[in-house]
Image 1: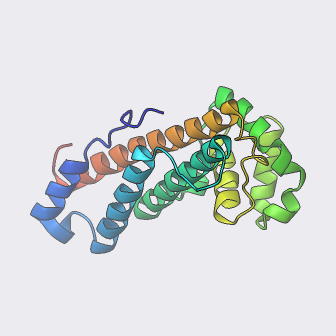
Image 2: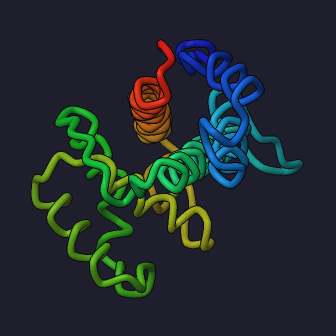
Length: 197
């Protein structure tokens, strides 16, 4: 897995502007949330593996992919909170990745009534499974599964190399979307504030 493929452009500029201009650039609450976002983003970016005594390498490959996705999604949630663009409103179309993720989610989707309590997520997941290529929906479903304990490497097809790679690619896509959205937010706020990006 490559861990240095993403860079959060503008982060140093953001920090310098906050130090120089304080609350006139962004509120303390937004700044705190963005700092939490950056910490989670970096964790997801640098995340390599988990280890648990007595587990197979295949199982750890699947749990690694799932836990990295949880960290990447958590970063996206924090960024969405700070910028008033909640992650559940994001649309990330990727037909090739969507195809791979449908295989990973096919088992979980069969018993989704026991997994997902949010009716809107169930409907969106049904649309995704029927051919919609918005991989953010798959990310949300998988995040729920990992965070609430229904994710297993076997159930999400991530024991296979291809399944784990699909989840890793999904994490990469989320992190790239975070980079683009942060850069856009920073550019817009600097323009309003009278600074340059």
